Length: 350
Image 1 (cartoon, rainbow, N blue to C red):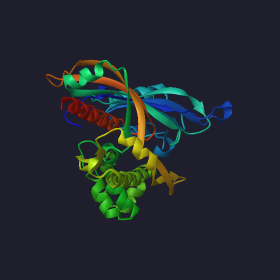
Image 2: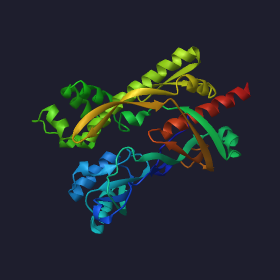
Image 3: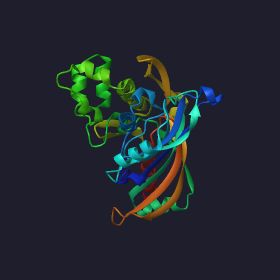
Image 4: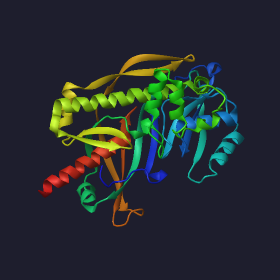
């Protein structure tokens, strides 16, 4: 994606989770408390860590349906094994809001029999501001209320690391899977994860990882599976389309794209999905299973408004909204959307 900018300020990237609350029946069996968690400047892992420290609730007893990044304003449902007093909710907000760009706010939603967990998530709605757009691109879109988009369903860079740190989550996962804990720890200590402050130089690498939330361990392992899935999709593009494939290196992560959106329909006919190994924690243990991921996703992007870009002179910004199924990356959708728009513009100028 040339020139266009994403995620320059938190309000540029707003995510609202679409999930289902577990079935609620007899009040006597309502062992879990549900909260909406809105946050800014913290990943889901960081927010759970902070919430656990303040409330004393074990991290593994704080349930969530999906992981949300730190660079944006996100809203999701979580479950707790205890109700949080209102003064603790206030304390949490005030503690995290010392930095004006960061906060965590909880709102009580109700009680139920089951925890929130991976699998409850249906998808996410996004409101995204795309910056540094040319007048030509904006003029092309201004009269279109809604545009259809097919895009390659890659895992984007945030799957592989924290912004402004080395993208090494997949490398950590690879080392953990091969039980190379020493090299996994070396990578972890430069990854920007909050838990690096918990490391005691006198403890072994394996014992350090044993102290991590087991869901974080599976996160790293799944990051490696995601990297392998991306690689396989790129290989297929070269096998099927050869010279029509364009390569890109984003934060050290390779991606491969098709210049023609129409070719994605052809890809769907032959390769609607690709399998990968999914790692899941249950009962304190990690299990593996074969899962599949669609190669191409369809969505509709709605144009909300166009304004002068206050961050980049002589440029415009556009705010758009759309929905994606669980596991899909909005940044990947926007990057390919802009790429197709720029290519169409160049073709008309010939």
